[in-house]
Amino acid sequence: MKYIYDYEKVGKIEKFDKVILMSKSPRRRDLLNFLKPDVCSIEINEREIEKKFMDLYVDNSFLLRAGKTCCEIAKAKSHVFLKEKNLYISSDTMVLMGDKIYGKPANLKEARLMFMSYFGKSHYVISAVCLREKSYLDVFFSLAEVRFCDYYKELDPLIEDYLIEENVGDKAGSYGIQDLDPRFISYINGDINTIIGLPVSELSRRIFGGYK
Image (tube, rainbow, N blue to C red):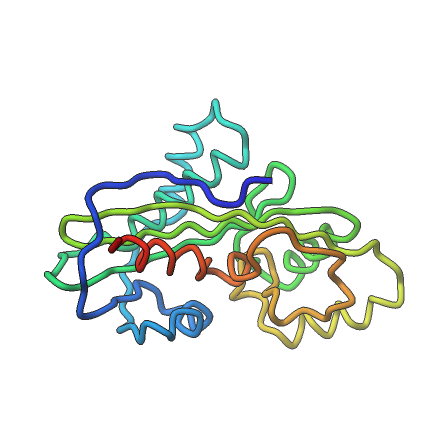
């Protein structure tokens, strides 16, 4: 299974004085804490971008279409006036079940339907990352596979408690891997941080390995 896909690269990374994380996600901020980033964000129409590029890449496999589209959303999140000596980092995450993209659930009923669909099956999570400086751009995405256990009725109270207590309306696909009861998961292929929302190991390698 391939886990890392390059999408676009221009120029070479230069030494920077400041990192700007273009996301207000507390999970991404925590994962990027080793860079001590400032935090900023801009409003974009993610669904409009999603429709445009899912249509554009219709001849690709569904996973590749979604990955490339996720990259375009990540790029759009860092489309700002770029200052010298600043490294801008933006990201987007998609949960894929079959040939559907699972976004944030509109209500508890939708969250429950999403969550229950995972049991006994594998689904995929994509996190795309855009690294930008004034003369540098590197966009890639990371893929992870998540397999939920087969459903059995004793899981019902655990599922209901999770859906009600963990504010899943804020989470794509109705869950955060770091919050799940371990009894739900059979296995994970790929970087768990991809599922949380930022593939930190690959991001760090591209930043600091780029100076060589």
